[in-house]
Length: 181
Image (cartoon, rainbow, N blue to C red; front, side, top):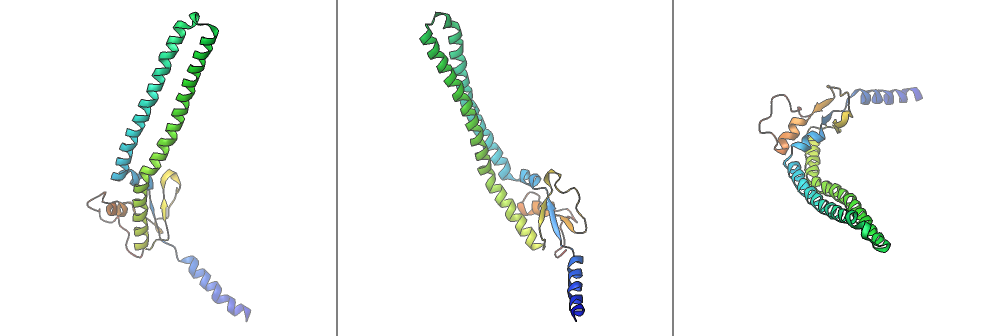
């Protein structure tokens, strides 16, 4: 009796294992870089970087100017003045390094914030495509993370996503997956 109840479970397991799940795949980074939001974010980021660089350059120029003055006049300074000037130069140098480090952190944070809207739009589009075509998941093929994708089970959804995002006007024939595949 136990053997008879085990057979239907075994058959069910075999049927479930033999039915392949359909999935999509895409280069997330490639599509992201094609989006107008990405281009705008990169432009805004370049402007922000230029502002931080200009401010850092001002600090470096002030340091260089004071350092040249110090080198020219150091032989005439009493010990106390020389130590005071050295401390000022050290403080300027430390402030310059700290500003550069902080500005790198702020630029990275700004980049994350600027890219957030583009990522959100792309993720929503991937969700819509995945649900519409009945995919179990959509893989990101960036960075050679998927060196092999079975063409029977996997479907390249790049053109469908491009079309949904308005990145292409005419879809080439044969690039969209058939519904239910």
